[in-house]
Length: 412
Image: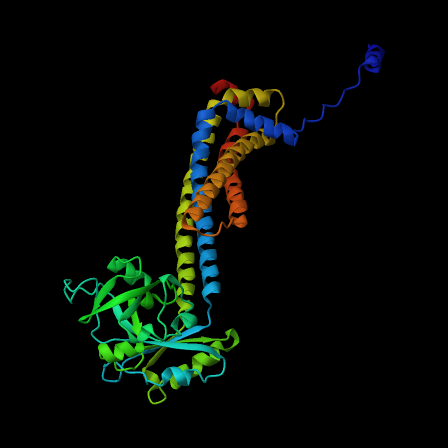
């Protein structure tokens, strides 16, 4: 008997090793993930829509913010940061101070100063379209005596007509700021306006001055006619100074003392371009707020994808059980559903980026702003979508991989 068993053992077949586990290639992973989405296109589209809205909101906010900031930066560069303004302040008793008549000439002697000009507000001066308009209805407009070198110092340009010159400054003529002309309903020279009991002929209308909005709301008249006709005392209320870029700080330090050596504390010195710089900071703050709202939308979209994938796992238990039964490992099942989630989110992200980019370009073109494409926002939008999809699909993928073949087939 023993010899017989030995003979059987000698002729027995050798035990063959199990075949190596199949590995999914990148193409296989993408194919399986896309097939899962194609089976439920409407649900996939609605889930991707949440991601698209969130990404579109973020890209639009960043894109419009970048275009707006660039427009402000270009405007600051064009207008320059080398202009300073010295204005009258108040005395210790709360009364309005007066700048010396010689203030513009004294400021012109400061090293680094390129040009100086001044305006003086006519006390009690009002500008109205006709003498039928009540004197109390000023429209927020002021009458200012202006020096002839004002346009050169401010960089002002005339939209229609001409500015004051050596001849017209002695007559009852006026040049209106952009806002003043709009409020008076005057768009062409030749009309007359009523100032402090006198009729003045409009000879020019200025373009807007972003750095000097007070000029936009003023009717400018010649220095001599203001003194002779409207009782102007000849004291400037604002002195405008253009300096070289390298000397702005040094001019700033001595400007108040030069304008009014006796009472420098009563002089208010400012740099008008600082207002535009402050706008840049304000826009950055609001962009952060709206970016947070876009992130909330992205979070909502991620929750929608997670919900969709959880439902997909529940509905596809038979598929999961069948794949496990024919040899798919837990890692492959997990990777399949994670790929579906990422692909779904990526489709929403790309759609959102394109939508946000289109809105940004259309809005910038409508406002006349430079078309700035925020590359970081575009790349960040796609990356945020992929990350959201990965996080949203992590739990459903782990839940799917945890199913055994018997569990999946029994409950399918």
